[in-house]
Length: 372
Image 1 (tube, rainbow, N blue to C red):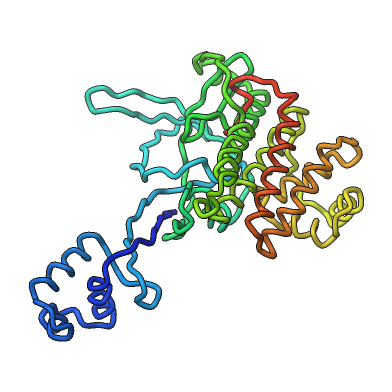
Image 2 (cartoon, rainbow, N blue to C red):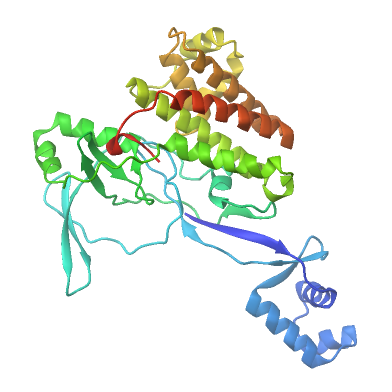
């Protein structure tokens, strides 16, 4: 699906008046010139400038907006339910030649230098909505300006995304559009390798790569959140939209769960959560049953649902970090539903940075074991 960014800009009074008249339905330059008692050449110039720069009136004619769009495609992975890390350009469809139910080949490169790629198709039973949430969209804005926004401008559609696979001593890793390992997809691929001999044979043909250390997905999320907090500490509250900060909090909560699951070798829950389970979590972690029910109804890629699954898995573990993440998620839930002040968001973000650093204190793993 497409997303676009729009930013409000100031302009001069005459152009704003011309645009308001055009917006009311009068597009003839000579008649607009008569109405304003201005030279027709000037009106033609202003209209040409508006068309060239895609300018129009907004806010009941009080200002001018420049519709300067950055358009790209975003993808939601069916196996994990998550949006991929960054928007990308629409690419031409691949001509895949299937040699079996889960094997295929396709060619890349120029006509004179073609490279044949052997592909494995990963199956998933997961389905879900394609439309990104407002919080997810705010994450893609990556904006330092509160006036900037991100919006969906087309409907989603299913597609098959081809992702590179790398291998090191720790196993196989599926890479995202940023060439960073995606933990959940990597686990899915490695589990298929363990189950099927034919897939294991395919996996051995993947070249062995370097084992250079990379930051985990939680570290990357915490770095970005910390960077934003640094701007806010020096008084730049106007430079960051609250929706963008909220999106970073949501991202970090989800990455915290991913990292915890990896650190303790916990498999992701796949069954539907029952009312009895949500009540048990509410009782154990002093949460309202209505809150845990709401978290259970959220998409499985949403941080609140991921935290609920983790709380259920660690119901009797007695880990204080689990209690910390439940408190942070409850605060996020409250701010998401009721709105929030800048100070409340900053306090929650700082709390989440502290909880994240506690979890990272026990970090380990290699290239094939992290996610971004």
